[in-house]
Length: 291
Image 1 (cartoon, rainbow, N blue to C red):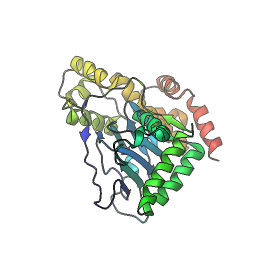
Image 2 (image 1 turned 60 degrees about the horizontal axis):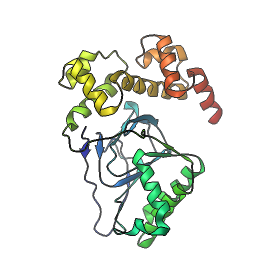
Image 3 (image 1 turned 90 degrees about the vertical axis):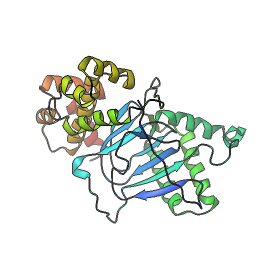
Image 4 (image 1 turned 180 degrees about the vertical axis):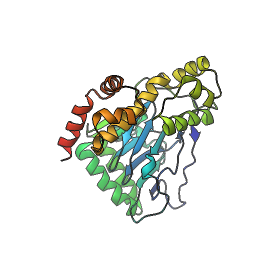
């Protein structure tokens, strides 16, 4: 599949981009770019796609996405606001791997930087103290000038290289072919699914969205994502269940139906397959971590 190639602007006075966005969904498509992306979310929550990984994202998440890795953040509908507020939505850094020179990463001293950028090809979600440390460096980087900006970026990457407090997102075997022209089709599939997952979506229905017959669609989707459409749909639904469990406002029996599962036993089974926990244990674990 070919995600959309995004051109990231860089100001003439800077070798890489650091900015704050004040509204969500600025790049509301499955896309990629040659720049590495480091993003810190200050507001909002929703569904995160990095390679073949589908997870929830929320406030204070920090993610490092490697060069040309397709990704997409879609906010929950209730969080979308296009009015600029006093609080930034996210801080975003974009830089090419060679912006500091063609041979910089080949220097022996810079091996840790090269390693963490190689790991970023799967997408990395920061956790624990590492996340707090990088958040502080990003806040300084946004205001820094001159060489200090580059030093702060290096410090951020070195902090990751020295830590194991991150989760690899995409699977080792995920591959993407940037030469194919399937951008509109895959975006239509994603958008339709995210807008309708609370209802029953038949194979004929989603195949029609893709402009294909069901058998061809099944082969197409599996070949390009490494999973069946049913698996993909269940991951979206389980992610929504996780949000409802964290909100603690819906009974466990009810939230499965509100997320598109047709019966409770199916919901319970798919949830445990995806998270390793029962819905009840998931809610208890999150409540314990966030009293």
